[in-house]
Length: 87
Image (cartoon, rainbow, N blue to C red):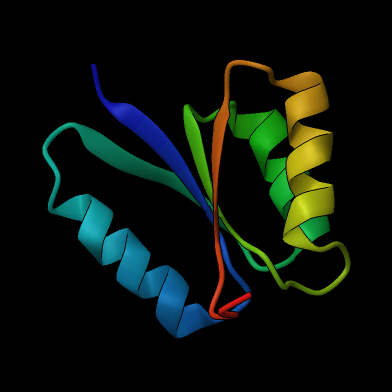
């Protein structure tokens, strides 16, 4: 079984790097990408990924708000929030 991952990050370079890293894993597949929080929620509900890798700071809706919205509808989806902020 392959782990289906949605990447949500507003920095294209970071998102592309995560996609490339996931592509090296035989048991993982990047199924989609979102560049803001609202799009992340929409894409998660559409794709129903196993995991969402979510940036904390994004336009439209931050990662925490987006994660809450996703968890409210997709309780089996796991969410990993990443941040460049040390705090």
